[in-house]
Amino acid sequence: MSRRWLRRAAWLVLPAELVVVVCLVAGAGLPLPVLLAAETAVAALVVAEGVALVRLRRRGMSWRRAAGTLLPEPVLRLAGHELRLWHSMALWVRRKRHGVRAGDLAFGHARDDAPMMYGLLFVCVVETAGLSVLLADRPVAHAVVLVLDVQTVLFLLGLRAAAVVRPHVLGRGVLRVRSGAHVDVAIPLDRIASVRRESLYTHEKADGELDLPVGSRTSLTLSLTEPVNAPSLLGRPRPVRVIRLHADDPAGLHTALTRPPLPSSAGPAPARPAG
Image 1 (cartoon, rainbow, N blue to C red):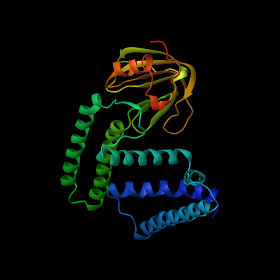
Image 2 (spheres, rainbow, N blue to C red; image 1 turned 90 degrees about the horizontal axis):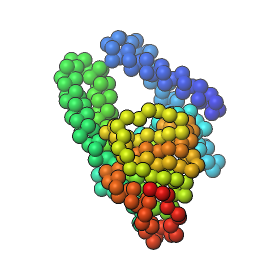
Image 3 (cartoon, one colour; image 1 turned 180 degrees about the vertical axis):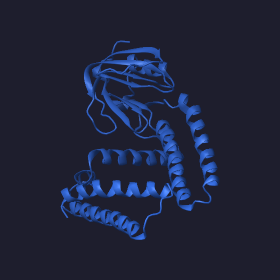
Image 4 (cartoon, rainbow, N blue to C red; image 1 turned 90 degrees about the vertical axis):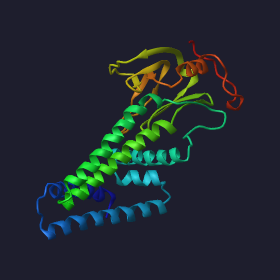
């Protein structure tokens, strides 16, 4: 089956499978042949995609490029985000950080979000337990809702882990600004025109600006001489020249950007922006 037909099959089979799941959760009885046909179609699609992926790999394509030829870019990016969340949870358990090399300076930004995230996790756990009791006499709905609830809890844990293990990183002539697992923007230091310390609690969306609040607050504003690309979650290009972000130690990040040179392992320090 050609890659074009695989894509068309995916757009037909996956929505049909979603309809089947919704019907089962709602308690609608579906004939056994319909259920068998739906699950057979999903299984066949998975097998066909796997075979095509292996063939592309044998032709020398990377995993990322091979998957990109089979799946729509938004689906691929959402799957990549999910994998980064799982990777972040693994790093969190091992007490390690992502992208922080020897000699780099790391600035965390997850402290102010902790109460809200743990509160949401508590509510989701309580909801999971409550729905398990309420749906005990409806096994299909109980199973589907339980899977969704557990996935929600894991997703929130992944968001929290990503915020903890992916700090802002300064080193090698670059400031790496991050927010969870979905924003990771590398800013060359020679493009930073100014760094201002200012606490803002409201942020209006504007072209050419990127706001990364934590607990609705940003504490530093960077103005750039040239735009950098900060793509959206689904990959849409977004050039920005003003970046507002938060750090647990905004004074330390401001000082590191405006005065002291980078550690010696980072090589010659470029000219510092004005404070």
